[in-house]
Length: 218
Image (cartoon, rainbow, N blue to C red; front, side, top):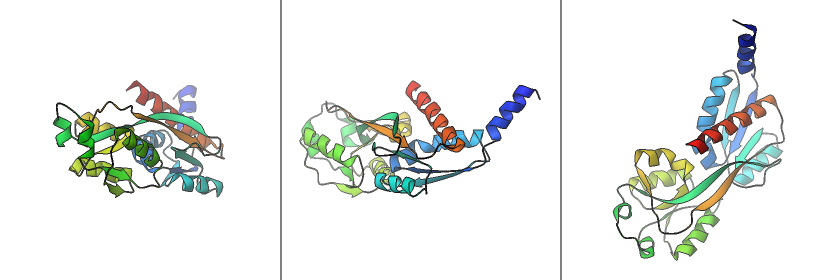
């Protein structure tokens, strides 16, 4: 093994500390599994701990030093830095009646069932604004997990406004479809924040950045 190969091997396996990540549900479920897979492949001896939490609890975990880095939709974290742009789009299952309707009307949205996140979800205020723009007064089913909402949409319970990123696999397989009703998609930003500058934190940020570049290309 050459000296260069030795150095590269040592660099990729040297980190053996613990990295504690606190992330909001969408980021925890839709972004971080791929990032942590990349991180584990490069640093197999690093211990990874992921906690799913609300934005307010993410900040609390960072302040109490129970998490090393946080990932949130809200720009309220220490040393906050944007890492990804996301869109909230209107989704239905491929078998939903609106998915096959050739001519669309805003009245369709009033006359179908909606699934909404609870008021603790940072996307709820954005979704409420969109419903006002649609002119829809929904009598929805409320769920407290983005993944539960997505699964309910897949089962045909109703339609929902969800993260494009969290639905990337279902869009690729054709299980979900985006409904277009001439309303501008909701744009939002994902942020990281930390009080720490450990090698483990820097390694995580490096892999997150690499993943985001790959996502933008795709």
